[in-house]
Amino acid sequence: GWVDPIYTNITVQGQTVANGQQAIAWDLAPEVAGFLHLRKNVPFYAPTPRITEIDVMFRIDSGTTNSGAIGLFGQSAPLGGLFEWIVEQSGEVWLLSGRVFGAQPFWVQTGYYLPKNVWHHTRTVLDSTTMTMTLFVDGQQIGNALPLDLPLPQLNHAFTSVYVDAPGDERIYFDDWVTRERDAAPFLSANVETLPVAAPATATLRLHAGTAMANRQYWLVGSATGTSPGIQLPNYGTPLPLTFDWFTAYLASNPNGAYLSPSLARFDQNGDAEVTLSTLAQLPSSLVGLRLRFAYFTLNPIDAVSNAVQITLR
Image 1 (cartoon, rainbow, N blue to C red):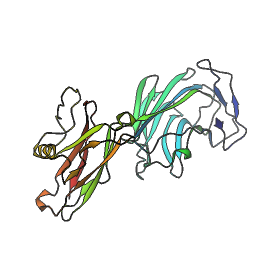
Image 2: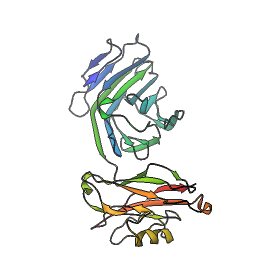
Image 3: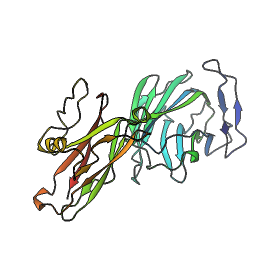
């Protein structure tokens, strides 16, 4: 599944293995300069909140001249790079960060130097709910960054690559490439961050609990105070991340009311639901700046709670 889309004079061999499988040995011709990469068309990320893990066995054998940078890169057309980490020429691992909603990207220096001439297990964890990338090397968390351009386009446009920038005469090996995806659930999001008080307005709260919660009952409630210390639910260890106050009490005693509906209902067959928050009419200007937080939990039994989402009145 590997493709060299740029050069044809890179030798791809299979003489070194990590775990009993054929590895890819990238023998860099010293006369080849510039950006070289091998592409593996492995789709990553789905439109729903997801966590993607990319595992790669990785090894650099020393040469007389170090490469400019060796790394893992993922891209999804028509956007630019979605995630990237590199082993810099010094051997230090760097993570690309700041590439969120058009922000200027920058490199995060982890302070971790990758030993050469031995195999390493790397795991790149991409979380679309927090827009973060976390890198683990040999089971140790090396660092995290915010490299993702979201929302992502269709799955079939995605690919990942290993690459070398300004190569030397090192040998680079990759083996046991595995990509896994799982739901980032339960998760709650909102289509807006603020609501005006000067006129009627609505916000959509999107609940995602995953297919395991299909057709299960949920209850969405809120707080006008905060998220800590949380509400302890019966027979469930993780508290609901809301501070119990007058707003919580009102919503709990008025499920599926005019302001928040359907707050007590069931997920669809995909474990998803949408709830509408409505101001209904003009509100007092004294409410400007009020921060409302929302979260949901499952019922019968109570076995999952979501994150909290904030909507500020303006």
